[in-house]
Image 1: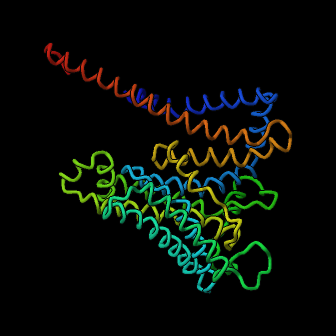
Image 2 (image 1 turned 180 degrees about the vertical axis):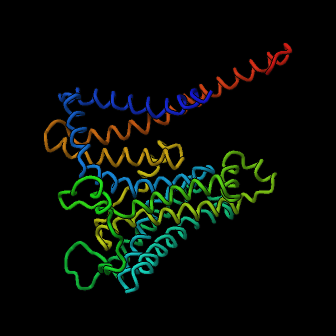
Image 3 (image 1 turned 45 degrees about the vertical axis):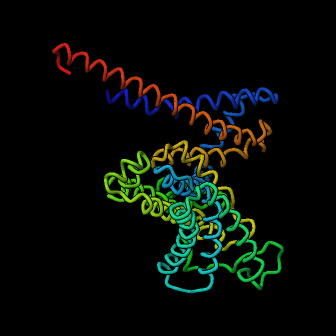
Length: 372
C-alpha cells in the first residue's frame, strides 16, 4: 500500500517532466536542432559548480514566491498580487535600510520587517475587501498590483532615489555594510572547491529553507494552520465547527503578503544592496507556476523552484554554443506547468477510482462475513 502511494505521488511530476522534454524536443527538431546535442550541452553546463551556485541563487526568490502563493492556495485564495507586494516592499525596505546605520543583526532585521510589513499590508487590503465587501481577491490583487507598481515609479522619481546619482537608472542609496547578508561561499568551498567567476551563493538561501520549514509546521502543528487547511477544503464545515472564515481569510492574506515581502530580499541584501529600476520583476507570477508544480507543499515547491532555477541558469549556454535558442527553456517551463496540472488531475482521478474500488472490495468482504 505504501509503495503504491509513493508511485502515485511520483507519477504526476515524473510524467509531466518527461512529457515536457518530449514536447520541447519536437520544437527543437522543428527549428533544425538536434535535441540530443542540446540536452547534452545543457546537462554538461548545468552540472558545473558555478551553475549550481547560480541555480541556488535563482531558486531562492522563486521558492519564497511559491510559498507566498501557496499560503493562499491552501485555502482556495488566489493572491495574484505577490508581484506588486514584493517590489513595493523591496523599494521601501531598501530605502529604510539605507537611511539608518544599526548593528548588523538589527539592521538586517529592520529591513526584513519593513519589507514584510509593506507587503502584508497590501495583501491584507485584498483580504479586507473580500471579507467586508465581497470583492474577489483575484480582482483586488490585480488592481493592487497596478497601484503598487505605479507607487514604485512615483516614489523613485520623487522622494526615494539617490540625489547624488546622475544616471538614467534611478536607484536608492546603497545599504551600509551592517545591513548586508553574508554569502555561503566559505561553507560550500569547505566541501568542494573554490567557486570561480566571482559568483557567490547567497546566504538568504538559509532563510528560504527556514520559511519552508516554518510553513510546514504552521500547517501541520498549529490550530491556525489547521483552520486554514480545513477552510480551504470545506468552508461550510469549517464554519460549522467554530472556525471564523472571515478571520481566517484575513489571516491567510496577511501571512501570504508577509512571505511575499521576503521575495526581493536576496537581491536587496545579498546582491545589489539597493533598489533600482532594473530590479528583478516577474517573480510573483513565476511563483504561481512553482506552487502549482509543487502542489502547494514546501518540499514540492522546492523541487519546482530548483527546476526553474536550474533551467534559467543553464539556458545561456544554448545561445553561446548555438545549439538552440535559449527561449526553448521558456517553452520547457511552460509545458512543465501545463503538463503538471493535467498529470496531477489524472493521477488524482485514478487515486479516487482506486480508493472507491478498495472500499467496494472491503464492503463486499464484510458482507460475506470475511475480514474487511
